[in-house]
Image (cartoon, rainbow, N blue to C red):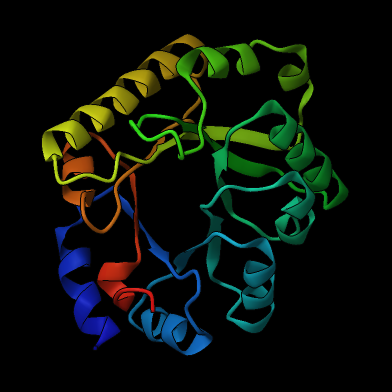
Length: 221
């Protein structure tokens, strides 16, 4: 398996303006460095302690994104360096990220995670919950977190029409939230959707960030 060979068609298929988040969770440093040597600089991890270790061991120009469900008690491990938090799914989590960002004198960009799938197991907020967070006094007082967009995971299914309609829904929600709260904010522009099996559909429906792991590194053992 050549990581470089796997990456080339993916990179060639990405339009301008779509970022590849190379999902490196559970992968050893050697494989991450293979992707790095191909020019990849954005990596996605889901376990804060593993991410913290990799951050300390790997080149400092890597942009680390945390893409998995994040527990409040783990935020402290990543607050000093994380570039983007993809999965903010509660006001409580956001409060903790803001607190830890303040301790580290940082402004941490984040995405609201929306629940767009049929599956109950997936985390995420409804559009009404996002509105109530943005309208809350708490949110307005946060100075060390920065909303930059939405993230969502489609249902794990062979039915690509369903996947497409879930992505369309996320884009519709993004447009509404952008229009109502962030119309003049250039930084609120990201839609993180699409993984190895559905990223091409996600791009057609407006994704600006695709999270791809298994197509690059092979399936997890």
